[in-house]
Picture 1 (cartoon, helix red, strand yellow):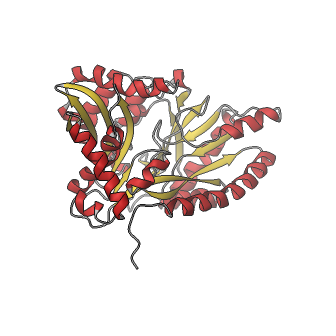
Picture 2 (cartoon, rainbow, N blue to C red; picture 1 turned 90 degrees about the vertical axis):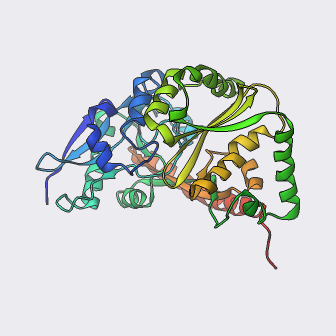
Picture 3 (tube, rainbow, N blue to C red; picture 1 turned 60 degrees about the vertical axis):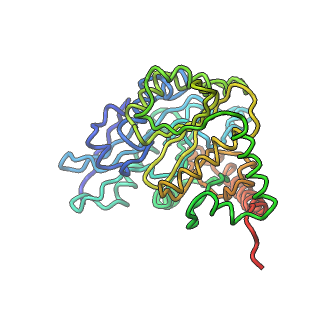
Length: 385
């Protein structure tokens, strides 16, 4: 078996584009040579917001890169969606230090997918050996950087299995996803709702039509860079309402649009030619990912139209199998978004804290299952006799 050499990189740009292209899923909006590097270059995944890139690379004895693990040293928990605020508080109450921590995940993006990018080349070590090397490397870095922990946010099934086998704890949470079901169009989808839920959706969509606004769909390569300041103002307005920081700048969004092209999808509401609301999404070949919403003014049901109904219609037309509109939001249930369990994995360095957090996660898991089952009972679909 090849001996794997591990190297860290202080930016995604430090890993050649051809490596990203070879190891990442094709046409993925977040796992590619552009998304991470653009967020890093514009500071959205930079020191100002508590992100320091230390991406881990594995090479075989021929010098070929066979594995990459996106990795950040974190000074806080903003934008990683693993909900570990109470863990940091517990460390503080016990006189311990939680930050820095390490995180393998997508900055500001709670989307499940591969985290350990491994080669499928027949000449390379097998995937399990590459994953073990990356896991061992990440654990070693927690000691090197004096970190309390290493977290892997929303890994896919193969990665999660490997992480569990190497002793990482599992946390579970609920997101709400729209799942394709063989519908021909939005009316066909709506026909599966109970009568009262169907009337409610139709009433909401009618309110938007009666508002006089026009709805348009634009991909990243269809938006002029000069339009981004106005669209950014919509995005930033949502964060301002909740006293949060809008970390993506207009220039960052413009660069993402230029690089990702049709992998960025923006649903806009226009008052004449002026955008008054928008929902910013990204897409792969199989899924649509909702990320940001913003609105100037008060328009009845416009949030539901741009963030949910337009996205569902887009998935149906484009043949996408899944729509993940982001974390949280029980109001998604009534629009047909199914409660789905998502997982993250955690390596806690201190054995006593690992046992304490492990006990907490076992108890929490039962509550998450109960919540998922209760939420599913409120889905709008007809119950066949």
